[in-house]
Image 1 (cartoon, rainbow, N blue to C red):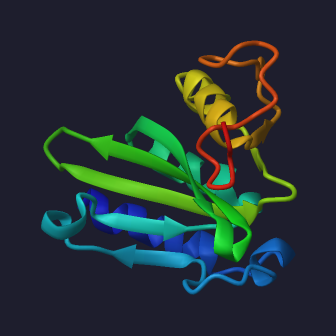
Image 2: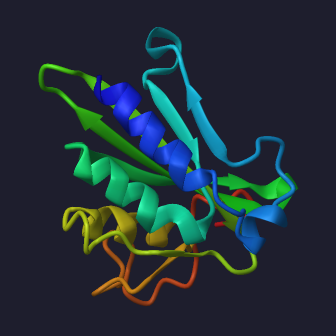
Length: 162
């Protein structure tokens, strides 16, 4: 039940006009929602959204009773993009896992913060900023979490050299 409700709400969000930044993305998969095989992938829904749609998509997941598991990044260096991946879960009578992902240009790695929706996103976003250099616009305290305060490097970028 929750799978269908969440999928329909995300589909409705993504049915509108595609934001300009999403239209410019040159990756293989277009924005949209896919139902996946949990046994193969470890999640039920995979939603790819633009950075402009991110807060609305996360709000939908929150309103459907999901909790935030993690936020991480992926460096798609050949495509000159970074991807931010958000994992959400429900472990009540209707177990469901949802992934929301968005891609942004490596030259301007900025997505909006979700800390107003999930306060626990604070340290996940700080860690992702440390390791990938992704900026979370509107974050209340985007300072290094694990790296030294004066660090000017992001060690999980594929072109990082120690």
